[in-house]
Length: 217
Image 1 (tube, one colour):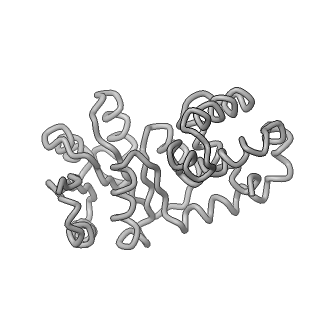
Image 2 (spheres, one colour; image 1 turned 180 degrees about the horizontal axis):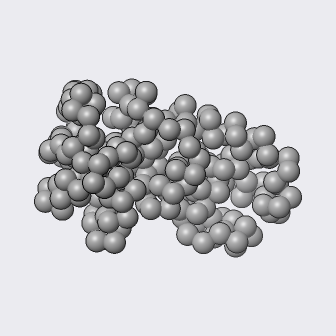
């Protein structure tokens, strides 16, 4: 069995220990090393070349965002998961823009971390359910005011269903299977959605879908 390799970076040894125990309880996952600050985390990513890096946002020397920016600039082949205590929409949006696929709240990390690692290693996005609920509630308060501006009303029923599934972190293949259409048709719908909503790139599309999920119910 090919294990998913990863590193853990957090400046609190107790947090690292708890995460490592939860992760290594699953035989499919292998922790290569740990780091206590952002600079050491970046060095570990370059040295060990893990598939996934689990990064605390608030670390000394380099925070999680600085590490993510460096990973992108250096074109390192690693998926990233952010750990945080904050339910902050702007932070989530910035993380998505930097290519971070996982976002886990520390108060649910021991429950969520294994599923998150497996999801991002498979190329899918993942966020703690508590965080997703929080963001949906925030966006729903403005839904009635924003639909006209966002252009969602111009989408066809199928395009709205595709956008809703994108907000659930479904891949194009998963969407195709769920809607009983071809992969190519899903990609066409995605392109049409981006054109109608004036969106550029998959990260921007995912961010938009999350922000307006309540309008697609």
